[in-house]
Amino acid sequence: MVRSSSASTGLSVSKALQVEVPLSSRQAIFVRGEYLRTSSFPSALTKDLTGKQSWRLKAVPITIGYTRYLADPDRRIVPVLGFGASYYFCRIKKVSGAEGPVFNAAALPLSTSIPYQERYGMGYGAEATLGLNIDLNRYMFASVQGRSRYVHGLAFVEGDDLDSRFTNFDFSVGFGFKF
Image 1 (cartoon, rainbow, N blue to C red):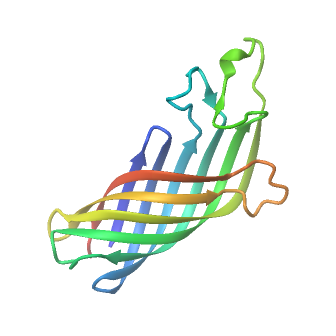
Image 2 (cartoon, helix red, strand yellow):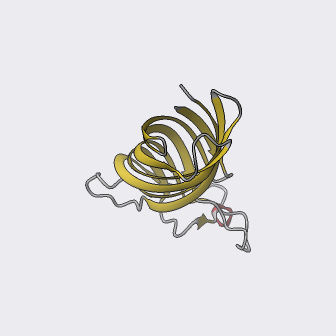
């Protein structure tokens, strides 16, 4: 089974390709390659919404995981539970001196350039998913899922002075093919 999905929340964008190998009628293992872009974003509760992103992450996580079908896979709509572990190849940019998720660039004089740090590295992550697979026909299905993930993007970089740890929750919609 091959699945391709795309997610965008306004804060992050993700494109993925996943291959599943069945272990039994209700279990499978998968390998997924993904391109992920995410960043901090000013909170809607912040009084001054002129804030800018204080960090940005671009990453290619490679994930190995387990999928459990919570109903008979021959049904038209099947709830799915999954979890996985990821290895991240990433780039992080962080505005120097930015604290928290909001950096107010509007408070700086116009002639001020905003200094940032940029770091490339490797890290790890973990995720848990809950979703539905909906058969469209004999060979194709739609997949809708919510995913919670933990990322430590620069875990394997010596002298990691940029905090590259965060949690994320996203929704994705994708299509898959059965072979």
